[in-house]
Length: 266
Image 1 (cartoon, rainbow, N blue to C red):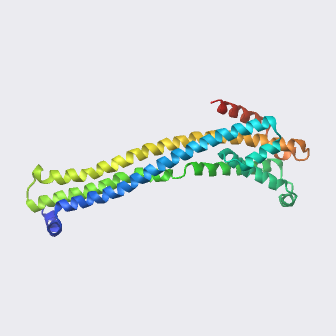
Image 2: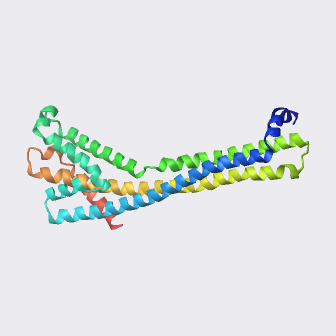
């Protein structure tokens, strides 16, 4: 107690204890208000963005399946080239690589690559496209994670300032009754309450959107598998010299079609 009085006595004389508590709580509250606004903005933005991505994915995939039944494969490729669906964006990377490998100028550089090598390159390109779409769907979610992890500590910072001020008041008055420390501690604890009030919704929102992104990416990957199996195999079926070069395995096409049908039925 004497140590507190020796080190904090001069500061408490210059600045009233209540002012110190209010200053700490005010600083914490201002930061937490900014965090809460940022969290709310991310929640609204991700809600609209994921809803739009889900709607576009389902509608575009259904339109592509309808084109397969009525139009040529070139029409499907043209639709994929301009589609905003995440699965179509991922498949475009594989189609572009396929076209580049079929280009005579690039063929001289590849030196007639083996069929399995080309297939792996196309799959890798599609996989990278899927990773890019996953990053787009997960955009701004780290903000929620940051708010959820740091908001309680910011609230605790304000609480610590208030408790230090309460001990300083004890050192100044030499009294330990509840009437001396109850008011500053109560004010200081409000900072912790604010921190938890900001962190808990951020944690819930982060977990919720992470689940939605995972569910949407599962749908996107299934659609991309079906699109790549159909597009990478149908076009080359009329070219005897290239059909074995890039055509996917039959079991891959069958599995993709079954998965897509089940996913579309849901």
